[in-house]
Length: 114
Length: 114
Image (cartoon, rainbow over the protein chains, first blue to last red):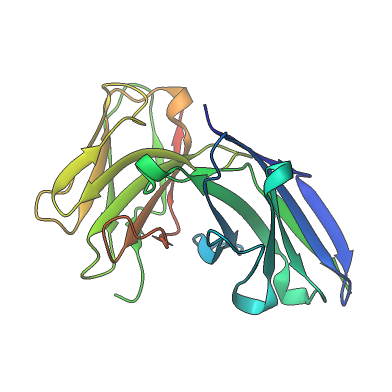
């Protein structure tokens, strides 16, 4: 069965530092890849979607996704963290036959220190 | 409304009682999803509607779970004879098109079964 693993339940960075959130998946066929973000007391918000053929995808709020097919991983990055980036980030995948069904990782909580 | 609305925000139920959770999707959105999110975990797919048709209910944990969307807009997730393991946040999401992977999530209903 398809599985998604987020590396690190908590990541802490200083304001202005690089943000790197890691996600691995298990699939013989590259799935569709997504990142969602959840701010406190809010619903999950779409951040970005990986498009087939691209290795780098730009999302909202300065976030980018880097896809590494050989490693079955995709990572969310942002060059400079802002206090407002503090939230929980979920990666998700979906497969072609059931592309409407998202399989989520367990989430990584990003803490930004002043 | 501007977003996906779920009610109630919190629900406490005695074990064995029935509960009904409501979701108002964004107006005009064709697809509607229910996900279950246990504490410390990512959301897990429960069921999917395209307009009023329930196209996939493979994620419903047992026959105690039932979802409907009779007029293709508002949806209700019903859980009969609630058990403690049903305690979780139930998330509703909608999208504009069929199989449009950009989902808009509600804030969820937190169900606690005592």
